[in-house]
Figure (cartoon, rainbow, N blue to C red):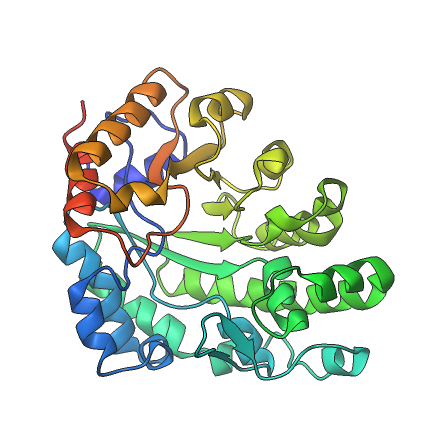
Length: 344
């Protein structure tokens, strides 16, 4: 069985000898080859240049061949940019949008969904290059942010400590909030269809800020829009939904049409597996900080997770409970890969 077949089988909740492995943000600053490339090209240049995106996507697979899936090197904020709201990185850290979306006129000024295909032509170009390099050996993942998460950056004007502006918009002007998220949903449907046509085997939706919503508001502010997006994609196409801090909403997410639910490291994965339908797979959920410890600790904790999932219903993709950090040690990543690929 190839890595690609293993990954897709896990998405379909088929029994496997071991779970497939990939790591969120598996390319990045923990890799010396990435840092070397970053000295020559900015992050945005790498995102917008298909040949560079190909190189960065393949770097972790070259170093760790046991990884079963590649994920496109890109950024969730290419969608606001394509709609007319560019972004940049602050010198002090975090995201800065070129302006804030703060009125109906600003929402109406956003480009239509059709602009995604024109403005983001480099994304399918990169995916086709990656697909050609991978052949049928490895799975290829596309991704995007959820409408709520993208709207948070757009309305806040960048990274935020309290999300006061987007929450205030949700509570005080639901019609305008819905108009913005409707535009984003249409753009994401177009975007994901383009990624699928270019060779993506699965799509991960990062609802990164869904966990900061008040519990009763999660449906109206986030999940209803995700459900709408999934319903517009090809039937039974594997969609992975990840919400950091979203464990209270997993039952509702399981009914969203997503085939896989990503789980952060704060909850016990076997208990979640037992509560979800057998047709919905789970992804996760090692603490990313483990990658900063030692190979022995990583091997121990990975084996503990694998053992805990041994007698559960099939459908598990092993991953960190969030993205790999720049401080991750190469020897720890190697220990993770070796522990998973040799597990029986």
